[in-house]
Image (tube, rainbow, N blue to C red):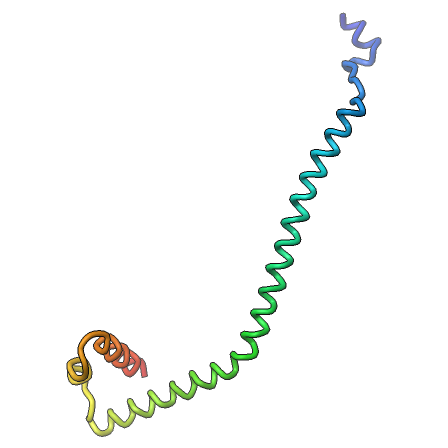
Length: 116
């Protein structure tokens, strides 16, 4: 038996795939490739949309930064004036004003003033 394996090259014989099997393999790989191409196209569309959004945000960012800086300066000025005049204290800020969500707004203002 070993002599027979040595004489025949030691490897079992493999049949070549038929034309139908090859066509079936090609069709399967073609479908897989089509899915990959569709995914690639979708990602490229998302990338283009993201780049467009980035460009829009870059246009408005300087204005928003200026507005934030101006608001920061106004809050700092208010805090400075309130500190100098003693016109504001935490309890009056919380208890004064309207009921409801106004309380949350006032507490947020206190928090911002405390950060300066």
